[in-house]
Length: 465
Image (cartoon, rainbow, N blue to C red; front, side):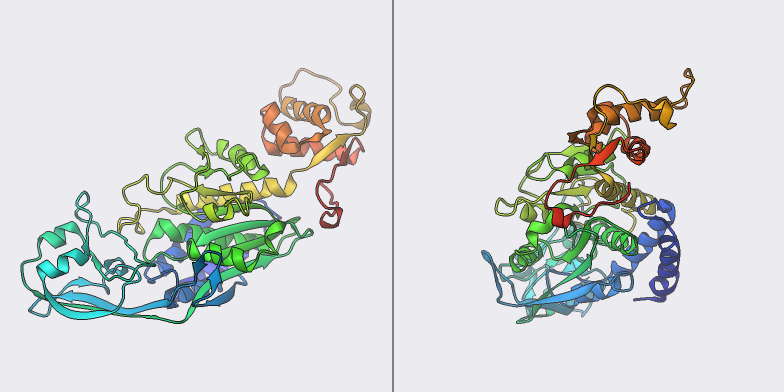
């Protein structure tokens, strides 16, 4: 990694995050710039579902968080899948008869069909063309294509460059290896006061694509740093894994851990200029589904909540029927709905520090509500308690300044029957969660509310609101 990450970004990030109270919002503009700088450094690395590019990326993240690398050998059976051979690439090109590189891996790692088998041959254009992939509708862009589980080789290039290739003899070289090795993933575990976990997952398997996948990877990294030195109720598990095979591998090797996961977020595509979107878990009515919908409404009317489908990122593995976890996906513009998706146009110009900072704030808000959401029981449920005697109610009415606080207090007292969470109350009253949470605090201090714990008592630790 370069000195920018080692000195400037890390120093500024640590100084800001280590002085902020638990789950208070840090400056999203500053964080956005720092996350953008890290993405710019990771962007040139050629990543795939295995190989040294993944390791290099994960080692870069270790500058920020206590990330442990896990290595799973080739051939390991993981449910219906098998960990594939490890792929590494050193160079690749197509040269014309004059020795000029007309397709050059050194200029863009998207130029190679990811997971291509090694090849070094000479052939005419007609023989080469079936191994060339372009986007005719976007003639200046290079597509991103893979062949993980079918032995093949190929090159991706702009359609404009393909049309400019004359009939000639070309030297084709992909200096790569497919050998027994390992699938590598990174994991950060942050214990809380309960063993109940929140899972944050991001995929690490794409090469030079800024939005998909580096935005999710970087925001997950900064979230882990943000949470790491703070008191927290939940334990947090951050996974930096190759898409599909990585989630399948982790779930297979960690089945005993899975029941502890109570909430989860898959992070992907969080750096573009589109509005925030949240894809629900398979169950559709879990607490994190409700929290995410509540938070996204605070980020503008264009934010959207999407129903679950079995197509997408690793939420489809976490939400497979055998696990059915409460894991949703947070993105901006959903994958596949913007033309830059899986092309060279998903570059550093396609993302912005502002979008990254806002996405981070949305994630932090979701986690903050999950941390603070409680179910209470009104200890004085027969008619309204005398709030004035307890110093909780203004003696004189008329001003609208305190109406929100007072209404929130009345709603909390009325709906705290042991079945409604604070978020339920906020949604029913059409108030912000923070308003309802703020109203509950003095009521609890005065003994008008008591906690209703749900789940295993051994996993629950009573805390001050």
